[in-house]
Amino acid sequence: MTAAVFLAVACIAPFTSSTHVAATAASEASVAQVVEPLMKRYGIPGMAVGIVVDGREYIYDFGVASMGTRQPVDVDTLFEIGSVTKTFTAALASYAEITGKLSLADDASAYLPELRGSGFDRVTLLELGTHTSGGLPLQLPDEVKSDADAMRYFEHWVPLHEPGTSRTYSNPSIMLLGLIAAKSMGGDFSALVQRTIFAPLGLKHTYLDVPAQAMEHYAQGYTSSDQPIRLTRGPLAAEAYGVRTTAGDLLRFLEANIDATAAGGTLARALAASHTGYFRIGAMTQALMWEQYACPAALDTLLAGNSDRMLFDANPAARIEPPISPGDDVLLDKTGSTNGFAAYVAFVPRERLGVVLLANKSYPIAARVTAAYRILSNAVAGPR
Image (cartoon, rainbow, N blue to C red; front, side):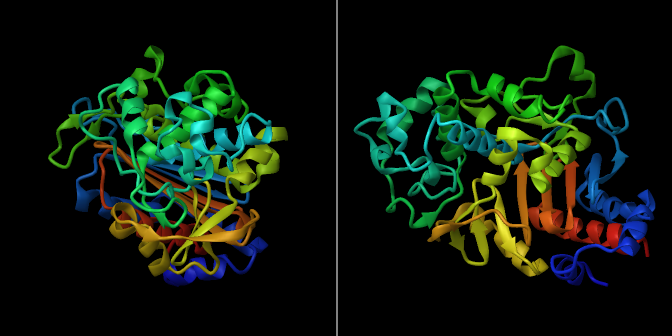
């Protein structure tokens, strides 16, 4: 069975007892058949892979957390997850809306007096959370060195397109949404994420600021030329790409998204609401930071949705009226990269199936997506 065929089948038919048995048989050797050639091809020092099948977790570690110390990757190894962070920020914004602190339908300038009279008078929080603000760039300009610089940049920003008509993937977009969500809740962003998301879900090894006692577990990242590098705290970085976590904790976050009721109360509602579909961009439906695909989800469709064109270009976006309520028969995914790390997560709620790929070197997104397909195929069909 090919990986592409596997997910097409898995998105349609719920698991049977026989597939549960096969999932148990998914050995480290079968995952290694995918991961080790990938690591060799791209010179990746270390990787962690997490798979969840109907509540059963499987975590596999490969290689080293540091080429200098040769410390192996293990269950405690912390990885930078880059833009997968955005899904936590989306959950916080959703939480703020459910608790009446903000409305995603409001203009951004309604929450930040310094932005009144700016282009954000006609950009909604929903548009910030779906990359449809009208042309915010992928990154803040190089001259922006502080949070204050970022606010001055936002004050003078002018939309390139009518908000809500095109999707341009943007870090500043989610930075601003996270800033507004925290302000609406009357607290610091990092502290609020810890209190409302990390702690309730039992994410004990997930950080926006890695404490001294956890630094020994923080993997060393590497550039394409194998130079050691780790994330430095830039303006509003926490909101867009600042999370460091383990494969186990990130898998637990996926499980909470797969079955939001397990989180309980307001957080459960917030996680589920972040899956609401608001815009169509080709075959991809843009939710609140999560990217969603109808099942059956072909590999080519996922590769197109995670292509360079989707990352770097403005793509026409069609608003969905009314928005699509969170559903089970979909695949949701998110990629993340920093200069020294790479991440990819995907899950299918109906199948109670999810995967986490973490690496301490960045490598092509297409390779991550393809590897995830193959790993999930092995997990369900058993090693071959």
